[in-house]
Image (cartoon, rainbow, N blue to C red; front, top):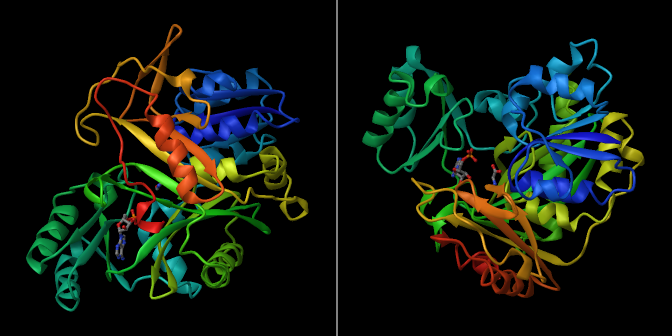
Length: 424
Ligand code: AMP
Ligand code: GLY
């Protein structure tokens, strides 16, 4: 297979690393990729949001499968663009079409979908600038804390959790009337606050069958003990100790199956990964959010645990034969810790040389924000590297990862020292 993978983060490096192990891979290109993806294929300097450039590359290079890492191209309709184009329509894309990607692209769409299919989720109301007063009245009937969500994509920043009614009203107005998140907050979902622990679950589907991938837990806050600003993710572990078989069965029966069947019943063809952001409230699972792609950094622990050939699964998605494919997982635990640039998630410097990468033998290093500078590797983003290790249990995996992190250095590097400690 000749494959084009879109994206440039740790998730894409993990996908590239896994695809490169497949016996059916002929050539892998990554657009735009990073210094890590380059070890497994050819990076090409194309933006995943420039569909015309993607098209030219696919046609010129006889690409026969496109894998989309991030949500933006999906929500913006890259799959529909392929389907509508004479030269591209025979090239399958792993990723949902624009309508299906609304599960992530519109919180209101996702909430309506869940309501329609009886999928457990927080109670909610959706408001616009014309119904701001109704929004205030809705807030007045709720108990704090108040959860406000911009309807559209807001680069992970569109969810606000507020302690007082006064703040909640002020923020609601700022989102709706003053376009705090631009167009993304022209509609706002107000949600009941759910108190519990979160985990991430994943499936891959061809629209009919689905295969579950291992669950994971990610760590979103910058500070140890889960304090401070939200980030793209500071680490992840898989499996998740509190997700026992009974709880995972509830997720499958109450959430995964109704989602896959619900999409089909609604006439929505979904091909690709579905990410279920789940919260455990007194041993009952609720959906916090859907994403239309794999999670990052969850991919950096989930994909290493996949023993089967990932291209066999992708072929199953492309040809609607996923039900015939076999998936096996590594029973061991995997732990990933992100090394980030000092200052992240606020302002940070780039272009710092990274030392010690070759000294790491016990872990897999997945590059996120890196660039190749001749033979040197330099930092090129806030989240720089994910260091993943396996262990017979989580404690062993974490110990290896933290051991490897000691060998890697760059100016002002930072990482959380407590990944996984809350679930050990
Ligand atoms: P989202 O972008 O929807 O994943 O929301 C970001 C984060 O906000 C989630 O990972 C949760 O930690 C939190 N969150 C979202 N919705 C709720 C809710 N209804 N109750 C409690 N926390 C929530
Ligand atoms: N780790 C959460 C996300 O990818 O959105």
